[in-house]
Length: 204
Image 1 (spheres, one colour):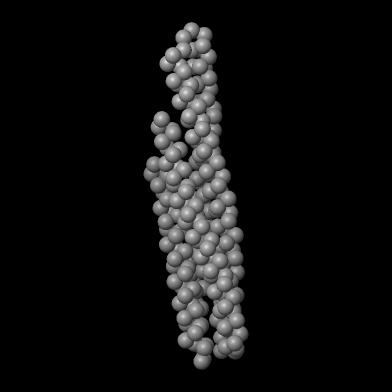
Image 2 (cartoon, one colour):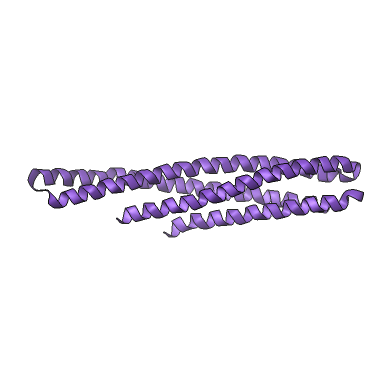
């Protein structure tokens, strides 16, 4: 029962992680569009916005890298869901065998006992090891994504500084760079939530 409850909690945790990943993927797509618009705006501004244009290109590259990273996270979460679902199935079968054991006698009882011992020693341990392995990789990828997003935050702040040198376009460029900063801040909040959900597993 304890293993079943743990697996159920793990599934709920993974669902929450999946929802946050969807938010970040959608936001990364938004940043990509914002960066394209910023590049066009910088071209219109000409020489006075060369630095802003370079940073906009970097932000677009950042958005593409972030989308790739989040898709990998989503795939890993799917793998984690499959592992936990298998663990839940394993727990249900074990529970059925335990109920059978209560009414079994003689040779039948010994067979059920042996089967239960084997399942507990091998299959369950294997599934749990897989689950912990996926969890560790998930945490590592979340940390890696956080570092990538920190780079995006630095780029957005730099773009804000460059916007001041945009001449007659400086107000528009400042607005765009502020939007970048806010949107990347939203991603950082989602990553903080991802880290929180991941930490729940460590504490559980």
